[in-house]
Each structure stands twice: as C-alpha cells, then as structure tokens.
Amino acid sequence: MWENNVRKIVPYTPGEQPKNPDKIKLNTNENPYPPSPRVMEILKSFDYNDLKLYPDTDSKVLADELSKYYKISPEQIFIGVGSDDVLSIAFLTFFNSEKPVFFPDITYSFYDVWADVYRIPYEQKPLTDDFKINPEDYKKENGGIIFPNPNAPTGVEESIEMIEDIIKSNPDSVVIIDEAYVDFGGKSCLSLIDKYENLLVVQTFSKSRSMAGIRIGYAMGSKKLIKYMNDVKFSINSYTMNSITQVCGAEAVKDVEYFKETTAKIISTREYSKKRLKELGFVFEDSMSNFIFASHTKYKAEDIFRDLKSRNIFVRYWNKPRINNYLRITIGTDEEMNKLFSALEDIFAGYNN
Image 1 (cartoon, rainbow, N blue to C red):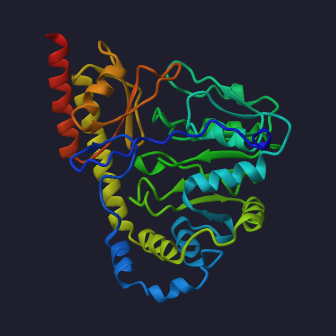
Image 2 (image 1 turned 30 degrees about the vertical axis):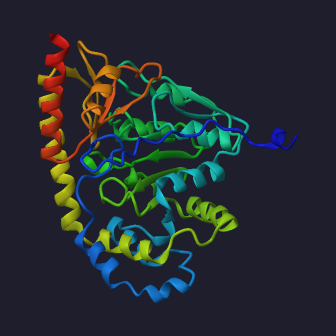
Image 3 (image 1 turned 30 degrees about the horizontal axis):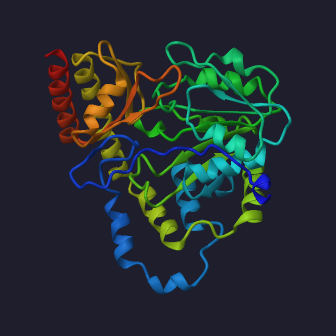
C-alpha cells in the first residue's frame, strides 16, 4: 500500500490564531506594535511590475543592510523565510552524524519535529528546576547542539560565558544558538562567531521588528558555515524570499530609532507586568524575552487558560510534563496587559466564591 512509504510525523502545533476582532492575543509572542513606518512606505511605493521577475537569490539588499548593522561581512549572513526556515536548513545541513543532536527537554517544540522529519537522532537534556542548562550535559559525544537563548518558552537567559564553554568543548560539532528573543534585553553570542568557526547564531524579524507576517529570518556565522547552508538552500529552492520582503527587511534594519523605541516599550511593559503578576500570586523565573512563563501558587494553569479564553484573552498553555502548570504570556501593550490583569483579578475572585 502506498501509505507504507509515507513519512509520518507528529507536526509542530502553532499557537491558536483566533479570528474574533475584539481578542487580546497574548499567545504567540508577536509584537503588539506595527512595523517601522519605512516598511509601510515601501509597501505603498513598491513597483509591482517587478513581481514578474524572479527575486534576487542572494537577497543582497537585505544582506547588505544586516552587514552594516552588525558590522560583519555579507558572506557571514544566511537569509531565509523566517527563522524556522533558517533553522530547518541548518538541521539539514549540519546534523548529519549518526550521533545524537543535543537540545533541552523544555525548549522550542519545533526542534524534535525537524529531527524526526530529517531522521536525525537526538537527546533532550533536562533543564534544572529553575530552567537552566547544565553545561556538563553538553560535553559528551554528540552530532550537534542547539538551544534558544533566551529560552523559549521559559524566557530564561544563559550567560555568554557558559555558552562559550559549551562551544569550546565541542570543536567537532556545530553549535546553534537560537536568538529569536535576544533583542528584548538579552546578550547575543554574535561576538563569538569570528572566534569559533562552528558557531551559528540565528535571529528573526518576527518578534522585535514586528514582521511575523512577512517572514524574515537570518543566521550569522563563519563564511564556511554560511556557504554550506547556501549550497543546501540553492539545491532545494533558490528563490525563497520575494522581492518585496527583501526591500521591506532592509528598510526595517535602517530604522534603528524605531526599533529601539518599540523594544524599549516592550521591556518596560514586561517589567511592570512582572510586578503585577507577582501581586496576583504568580511565580516565575526572570524573563529576558517578550513573554513571561508563569505558574500560579494556588490555581491550575489549565483552568486560568480556559477562563481567560472565555473572555477572549488568549495566552499559551501546554499539557506537557514539567510545564503543564505554566502559562506563557506574551507582552502586549500597556492597555492589553491591564485588561489581562483585570480579568485575572475577576477570575480569581470567582474561584474564591
């Protein structure tokens, strides 16, 4: 039967995308603010006659702006359609050993999906009770290492010194640091890419640059690593990023002032939200991302998730071991967060009656 030859995978489950117009959507870590006004101007002025032509396979206009911004060579930058595309290509390119790839047990839930799709052996290393990596777990024979920093879904940040220790201990493996949330006060490992040829740093426009719907991700590393990734990409599909996206991305990078303004707003709201959540009885490790991963001292996360949803407020809940009593709450605007806190106060009052 033909179905015997189908590759059967348990797919990644994305956050719910509710359609109701009055929703407060705090479940998929999107930025609550619009993209840079320069992006909006590009969309208005773009010569759509250019769409009859294939896009630039090297995304040069975007790569050049990223090169200027990060002060690295364009040949050290790989561009893909969202960081998921970049990471998928990285798995396909670098994780080809029969040895297992290492990543945490509580982490971005696409990692094990890609490993299964590409038939890559892997081992999940348990985080400590305070959601930290034990570096000794990553100093064993392996076929590659990947983890997010700050972590998703916990928001916990690891030190650059600890990460460098892991990289130094694994000269025969590619180490990928997924920095999707680093712009919200974290420290990037980018400064290490010229020191370690086996380090790949991955970032995205989806969170801090408010462009989740336009799909831009990129990796930075040694020229050799980037060449290998491009060789794989060009063997699959040379024309992955459309012309409009390339120009919009370049304009977003140029608008440094707007980028700093919006990320500062989110950081400020996050710190205020930490105080309010603690007052409401939540506990959590410190977050350096645009979300807070919190558990309540009295009430079940699943119940809170359900009752918030009934009020058109969406947060993220996973019924998984170790994290089934946690909620991941994306940082919205001050107004959205205050509505969340008011709803929580009302819900908890109902629990006590």
